[in-house]
Image 1 (tube, one colour):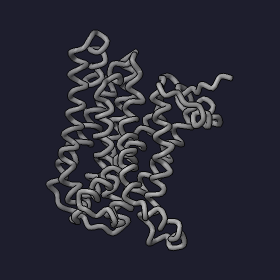
Image 2 (cartoon, one colour; image 1 turned 30 degrees about the vertical axis):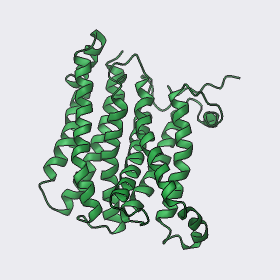
Image 3 (cartoon, rainbow, N blue to C red; image 1 turned 45 degrees about the vertical axis):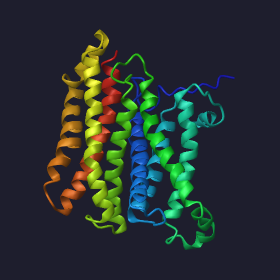
Image 4 (cartoon, one colour; image 1 turned 90 degrees about the horizontal axis):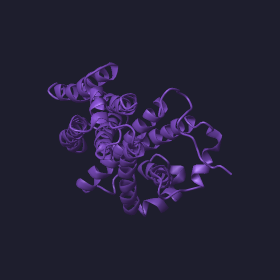
Length: 304
């Protein structure tokens, strides 16, 4: 029986990995990034036992986005109804199989973390949640490792496309981790303040605000390293470097990734208002989506 699954066709035609994959990469990055920053902030501030607004926001965001991302991934299969095969048949040398293994652990554990974070609100499940809460420390550390793995996995997943120089970059997983942390932190802080009553200048928000700059710097450095590698690479790589300076996708990169994702949040940092707080976070999220679209689409179009 042929158990191979074809991820190359589905909702879009014309290129190997279409827009549903870009949306999946975006949602998985948001999920892993939000959960990672929330747990790290709890560890840093020595509040592992507390169900803070940030933890609530990150856990529910992480759960919803990864489930939506999996829907996009399955929808792009040629035969979506046989997606269950990848849950049974594994190839330890395949990046996709290893990623599925990580997701099979990550998704239920994020669900458990969400139950723990909302224990006070879910009183009818208190007996069950109490059992999980007794293992809170271990669960949070395992979820932290898996969340970072999910962020990195999205980069490894597409970097194996060796015929596309822009995509086949060793630094791509690091870029996806950095951009996931940036957008995940932005999503978590918006929801924490807007939905769970956290203050814009709370201790958790100050830690996140301080972490935004080194994360953005790491993200920019990774993009710079990719551009330099292409410019100084072989003929195919130099052709792929044109993605940064020619055509529609160059415009999308400079306007969406650089302008909206980097410059706008920096400028809004000097405007102290509720509107700038939310707009800055939304800009970081939009910039991350533009980056995923640029890497996936420009990477394939300029590699043909």
